[in-house]
Each structure stands twice: as C-alpha cells, then as structure tokens.
Length: 460
Image (cartoon, rainbow, N blue to C red):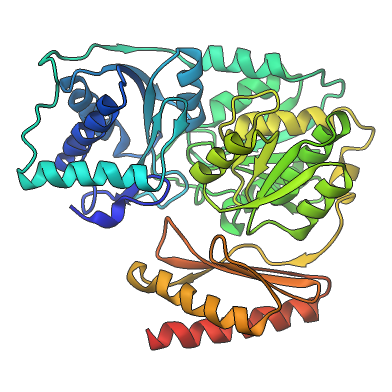
C-alpha cells in the first residue's frame, strides 16, 4: 500500500499502481470499519466517468455490503449529488469514486460521514485501520453481526434538479449560456437545471468520457477553459460555465471571453447575499484576491480567511455558520439557501439568478475592482520535500516581509502587493499566486519569490 494516497481531503492515486482491485477491496473494509465505529448503517455510493470508476464502484459496493452496511447506489453522478443524497435520503454517510480534475490515469475517493466530508486526521484513521488489516494484526470481523448489508439503486437526478430550481428566485431575463462539463459527469444536471431556469443553453464536451478527449477536466486553467471561451465568443453568449470532472468546481467565462476565477465569482455572490443580509460571514482562502475580502467588508459583511481545501472550507463554513465560502479553485459553498456543500451546478444557478436580474449582465463582471494578478502557478516539487521547502520559504518570508499569514503555507505582503507559497495537498507541486496594482510590482514580487524557492528546492 502506498501511504501517500491518503491525502488531506480525500484518497487519491494512480490506477494500476496505487489503486488496484485488491487495494479498493481492502479500502472498502477499512472505510466500513471506520463508519461502523461511528454508528453508520446506510450510505450512498456514486462515481464519475473515469474508465476505472465502474469497476472500483462495484468492488467497493461488495466490500461495504460484506461489512453489514446498506448501500444505495446512485450510479454515475456528480459528487455534489452524492452529497445531496445524504440530505435527501437521510443517510449516515457516502462515498464518491472520483479523480476529480486530475489526469485520466488517476482516480480517488471522497468520503462523507454524517452530512459532511472527512479530512485530515479522520482520513489518517482509515489509513491506520487498513494498515492493521494488511499486516494481519487486526482480527476484528468486518460485520459485527455477520450479516450482509442490503443494496439498491436510486435515481437521484430528478429530485436534485427539483430541489435546486425550488431554491432559485425568479430569473426574469433569458440569458444565452454555454456550458462545458469537460466530458465529466456534470453536463446532464447542468443542462436540466439551467433550462428549467429559463436560460438559452447550449453545451460542448457534454458526453461523459473518461479519456477526456477534448481537454483536461479543470475549468480554472487555460487548457481547461479555452474551448469554452471560443464558444462563448462565437455564439455571442452572455457567459460560459465550465465544470470540472466531478462537477464540484466551477469556472466562468464572461461575454468578452475573460476568465472569471473562483474568488471573483465568490465576490459577486457575496455582494448579492449582503444586499439582503448585512453582517453575514463570508469565507475566502489564502489564494483569494484581496478584492474579495475588501468588497465583503465594504458590503457590510465579515470577511474570514481560511485554509485551502474543499473539506477544510466546508468544515469552517459550518463552524462559523457563514453564509458563503469560496476558493480560487472554484469550490463554492452556500449555507444561504443550500446545504453547505460545494456544487458547481448550484453555484452557476445562483450566478444566473444575479445576472438575469440586471439590465446588462456584463456590468456585473466589469464592476469588480481590477488588480493585476496571476492564476495559480504550480511548480513541480516531489511530495517528500514539498512541505519542507515551503517551511524554509516561510522562515525566509517572515524575515523579509512585514506582514505574513501562515495558516496555510505563507501569504506575505509587500506594500499593496501580496504573494502566496503553499504545498499542494493533492499533487507533487508547490502552488504560488501573486497580486499587485501594476505589472511591475507583480513582476518584482513574483520573480523574487521564484528565485528564492528555486534555490531552496535545489538545496533539498
């Protein structure tokens, strides 16, 4: 077993190397034992469109049933529909077989206990259970009663669409919209919801295909959104909405073909909420633009900076009882009129509600304060040294810059500019981002950071 697959937010690895049929079978037993220790009796099981997902889902199902837990199989569906099933069906937990936005040869597992996903030490508990199983030191029977769990399928899409539409207020203007699920699993749900809201919707890359033949299934990077940009401009659409492979992350393109990043989308959504509900808490993470935190404050809200990661943000949202949380990566979470989980289709519906209620939808995007910034910059760095490299940079930054925030990597300020260096929890990379008022200031802080980080990595 490769212990590195047990990551901060989920379990993820390379199919055939890290993730084999035997691994998945044993993982099902380990997760079941973890669930049983928390009183779980019935769970939902879904999957994305990856080529390995059907086989892994069936193995998990049989392993979990063998441990005495009842399984409701929702089939191929966006990860947010697994989350939705926890509320809609009153379940004790769930699991989605998904590699999210990672390359086609990757897969993974997002695990829910109760109504939310586990992370951090809880995932490490599953790892510890599995290690005992594999070492032969754990003699506990899988099913305390020696009784198998039950199994049935459930069509979750229609109840989900009905629920989303019921929570969206009137959309008086019909907007022209292009959606791009990136050959992932979100296209059918997005098309159904947005048509029900009265939009003029067309789609590209709609067919679920685990080979991802058109582009990488990540709408927050250039490669993942260029087709959507071109289609929006060609159709003269009001906007485009891109979804990642399992549809829990959103990317947006405006009518001019500009990419609207997750922190910008969150800013628009936050300002709309704060028009009606002053004093609400809004959470961003360390990669988010200073604009988000400034605009929330101006609109009468309470901005909070948190750690990166969908499970961590979800937990912080619940802890703070915040109305909204958003990540640069496009994970957006509503407690305002929703259940608190990240859902690209629902986030898109809330954005359409805002845009369809103004005379000129493009002005909503154009009115955002302009800063010069970079997208996420990912520097390759082996998993075994990336955390040490960031720790060393953090020590340097605290001496070099006046204001440093080190809740997740280190975010440092130089005048009105800021930079971020943090280790990725999902890939062998170090993530950077920079923002400034002008190109020269941006270039200065970025080049200085790159140079220092390169020096640190070479030493390690």
